[in-house]
Length: 438
Image (cartoon, rainbow, N blue to C red; front, top):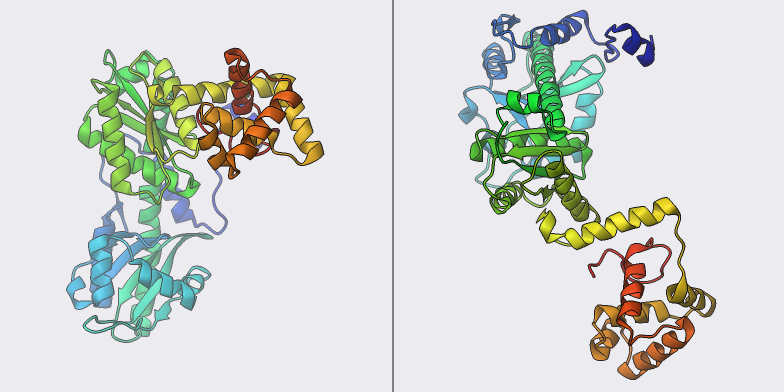
């Protein structure tokens, strides 16, 4: 059945990863059907989704400390007795993430490649460490749902496991897979419901705002973008947690590729400070930026946040948080570019003549004009920016006025030239960046 037929008939179509078991399918269906049901559920004799209970149960079976990790080596749960392990395990548990220097060595050894390509146990010899650090071997097994790897279980051991304990670890991985599917499916359903509410609220739905507890409040919209697609959901969850701690009545969700936050802030300035605080905490490695909307009615508030965000995503500025008031000129220039592209506008007048001359004679008249305009007519500053002597620059300036038939003393002519240089496509005009502010 194709998607169109499913929509027309109202029949739900489920797709399951190849090799998944009927037990795993059952868990996914239960997760969908049990939304909003508070009834306790057990899987394998343990509370559904309680990975810490699973880690402790596995540790008891193996008589060794255990961690359960996701594909990015983030610790999802750990057992007791971690003090019996080595330095790397202590750092891993405290930081809830395998330290980068250890994960790099595991990658170089091919441990992850071997671990994720089968359901067999992988014995990992101790990684050499300097005194006074300690190191122990590991036994690891992938946690799978069919062909999909959900994560892994790591056991700190003194020697390889016996056949009985090896089998117990393989069985534990199957149970952990069920619990991880239950957690993920439940979280996915909740996220989808939340995203639908936030999305319709951004469009101005009164009913959605009522359900979010945000009706009749002055709202500021924050729009968070993360370049790396694999990091967007994690950052969106962290964003929602951060906003919830500052604004208990806020709502946040990932909508398409942008995480939106609706916050009942008393001013855009306060919302911007909260956004900056969040980015300071997560660091610069994520490349995340946040546009802050104006405190107006929805959906206008979303539009203003999107406009500010677009400037941050397309410009080379180091700024990571911006209100629309901070970047309004750049936003208008981007929208003018959109209009020019939609109409198929071509270069005309003096700039067109200068571009043609530069192409024919391998000259730099356009670059000269750009530098002079950016320097507000200061020849010394403009010449330094163009890396030429001021006298050479003055000659080029006279030459471009002749070739382009451009009256540099006319403010309207200067403005028209500046606008064309900023608005027209970057590959149309040679030299320099068109993303720089006027």
